[in-house]
Picture 1 (cartoon, helix red, strand yellow):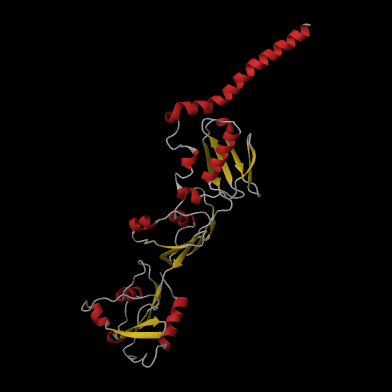
Picture 2: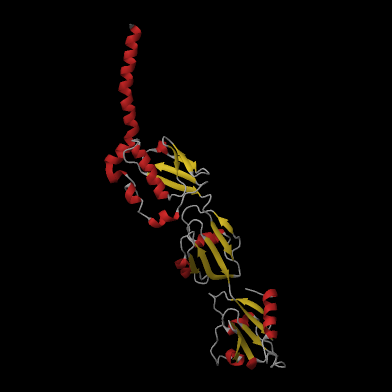
Length: 330
């Protein structure tokens, strides 16, 4: 009889304590709901509105196998956990179990997790935040004229300049044209002027997972003939170079140069076309300087060989090609 009384007392205490424990566990979520906006961070909104709060962000961050996720539930620290997405794209959450998140955006995964907590009646009004702390499959490929080409992981939102910096910066042969190919196949071309930092910052754009970045090589013009340093020279001033600038890069003309018989040889789809330039007048400031196009050849003949290119451009073009191979200097 005494044992029966003790059992009855035990059952009575269990029935009394159990509702209190359940209320204590649910209190943080209930308090967050009752307190309203004043108890929540300003960035938190309802699940439906947050899914469309930042479409660009949602379109950028995709979850994939191997990604490391940090999950936080507002005002319920017991549910915070750091998990890695499995090879099959699944994640095992506390109290919920396995969920498939691969291919979902971060915002969509957060909404799905909120719905699970809500549908299972675990939380009244959950607010879930998912942070991708490590991307395993969504790297950015940086190729072309950078110091360290390769694939770099995308750890949160970053811009084009961030990844160029991560790749060791531009090489001395880099041009101002940067091509970006998106995951969807769309291509975008950005002009980064290294000589104008403000303009470069204005042209900086945000990259997306699986983007491919290719930094183009600067265009080249050639100066051959009776000059101090024949060779090919990079058009690094935003792709612009004039005749006098090219002559200066070639260490000027020699005393034996025939300044009035210099030529510009321009390559066209139909072949080479020459144009006469009077270097003496250019050097004296009596004629306006002339802009050069990529692959142009400036030929300064020797005074004893004024007719060296008469009848064709073969020897000049061969000289420029040789100079480009051995003596290209930025």
